[in-house]
Length: 275
Image (cartoon, rainbow, N blue to C red; front, side, top):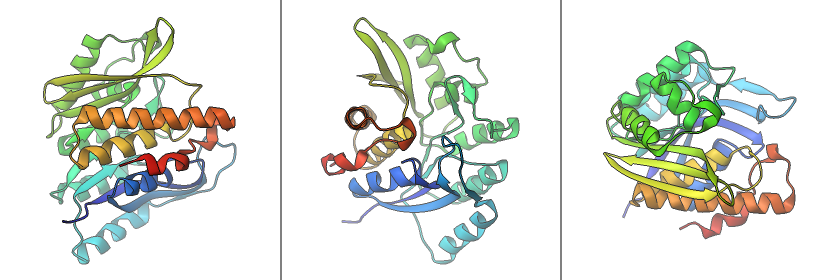
């Protein structure tokens, strides 16, 4: 018996329930030790009007070197938001020297728009990281960017088009696994969310009903549950369904509490539901 360890590369934000602040407790609840590698320290996330940010780029190499000198190894390495081309290069060196499973969440944009902080060079460098990936979890905007493809009008896309996109992204990876997350569905009785799974040619679709509007940290909560469950041996469809169900419960409770969107998900209420 041995507890798994995951190196979690993402920003640490004090308020707003996103990034490491969300992922660490959720992955820990799923019995995997989380070892954060900060990319930045923020007081609140950038969805607030005023925020303090300390860029961690200049300290990341020394941080990783300390891990190496202490002979630390990890079962998995997961990447989240990366704030510069320099950070992407540091991460590339780190994961290329490790035999760990690599899970890449290419946090670059949403709703058809790339984040203002992302440059063309950063997008190119992010594509280069794919060769190390065993699993990639882009949303539709990020999937389009990884392929250099146009975002579909209104975010509407067919299953066959999703299958082609996922297969093309998978072909750039070493693991051949992709989850395209948060695709909007038009249902007869309302809108829904689909997560399209491609696992070395096997295709699955996990759907759930959309509740309320966007909330900060939703993708981080989904990623944490799906990634940890998959690392624990669940199939990608099962891990994805667990993640979608968990997020749905959290969103429903956030709506009940009438929380502002930028306060994130009250996931703490449901941590003990995770197994």
